Amino acid sequence: MAIEKITDTRQMLHWPGHMETDYIYTLGIACEKFFIEIKENGRILGAKCKHCNYVFVPPKLYCEKCFAKLAEWVDLGIQGVVHTFTVAHIDINGTELKDPEIYALIKFNGAEGGLVHKLGEVRPSQVRIGMKVEAVFKPQPNRKGNINDIKYFKPRE
Amino acid sequence: MREVAIVGVGCTGFKSVTPEISYKEMMFEAATRAYQDAGNINPRKDIDAFISVAEDYWEGFSIFDEFVPDQLGAVLRHLFTVSGDSIIGLATAYMLIKTGYFNTVALESHGKPSDILTLHDIVSFAMDPILNRPLGGHPFYVAGMEMNRFLCTTGNTRDQCAMIVAKNKGNALSNAFAAYGANVDVEDVLNSDMQFYPLKKIEISKPADGGIVIILASDKVATKLNENPVWIKGVGWASETPSLETRCWSKAIYARLAAEMAYKKAGIMTPSVEVDFAEVDDLFSYKELQHMEALKLCRSGEAGKLTEEGITQLDGYLPINPSGGMLGMGWPLEAAGLQRLQEVVLQLRGQAGNRQLSDVEIGVAQSWRGIPTATGAVAVLSNYKG
Image 1: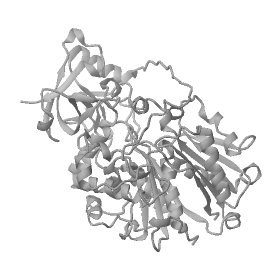
Image 2: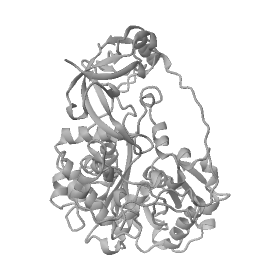
Image 3: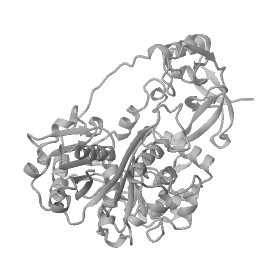
Image 4: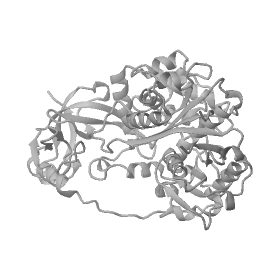
């Protein structure tokens, strides 16, 4: 019995459909401040809940634990730790990647959230959970105020 | 207190492609079988309310609910759509009957992923547009990250995940509804392509087309419709944060909370002893282990060992996914939960054919909404009203 079966029915009679849906997503107050700080100063900020003593990265305007409004900002530096990672060998279309991509959740000292990003300047076989990494930013003039202003995280010396 | 039973199930079976029928005809077939199974009832007069479970993006329609009534016999009747997993739909149907306003409810869910040419673009579109989507990539990298953390934290092993694939695809060989039954062993799994380290290609459930309709009834009418009703003892559902950045990466908290809610309602104090078997979400191999632990069917870190010892096989004392799970039956999108639930019903009725378990009285069905969600639901069923 074949394990792989045909999943493309395009050979049958059908009517093709296409959903054209364009959006813009407003960053909001908390994320706007977060990304402007990355763009202009290359700093990663967290939002602190003074009730729960919980620092959110990425920052939010509200505490998901106690529902309080957050107003205090904390500079978390650019260094963090790999909480978990994976090595992706295919792209979204299922095509094999010539250079596999490493995705990781990076956690920062003093905060319990983190950032999902790629790792660079490291071979997949060298990556470990618990590895210390730091953010590598694009040159300041090229930053646009989004998550890709960070090129990737690289192992810390 | 008014009790709720399942008195009818109807299923089209699951296939990798279904070019011969439309999604409406698929729903019609499942509904026709379910009405027949519930004592050959006529939906035009015997069903009080209808619920469908569907998501617009999976269906390729805006406001998909409007396309639902005709093929269920629900035109000019009381109908709404639940957007979520189909066990959340079951919980909704259960509560409708509990209100006392309705005695019979038909619950429908289906998936026709072979109609979706860009399935993973839809999954990707479910991710945070500001923090996650700009990174690009195949959204199942989230599963690779979760598997890595889960194994690292709990001590379950890579090979034990491979055993899940062998067990479930093997179980599916005895299930005529299953699309992906096969004889594979651990070595076959380990030789499969690495896709999202440490997750291999064969450990990812493949999409499958199919539809299921379930008929629920109050105890007032249940035994009139079916001599062997299967009773819903408890339902539960819960969501953890959708944020990839702040959620727990090792445990399925959503499933734990959903299970605690359902067990409390069902009066189950020690699930590992009282539950005879379970159908759990296995969209990815490691998810079966993680969900077993969340459902308190074993202690944290023990699910892999139980699998290795054969305890979760058909002849073990705690069979998990006797249907073959989604690794064996295929992933029917929002119908995944009803696919789990249907097997629990068939087992409790003694109608599971070659894979029938012996002496089962309490079974659990659990669902998860898949990547990138942290929402799950649980139903506890029994063949005793008790």
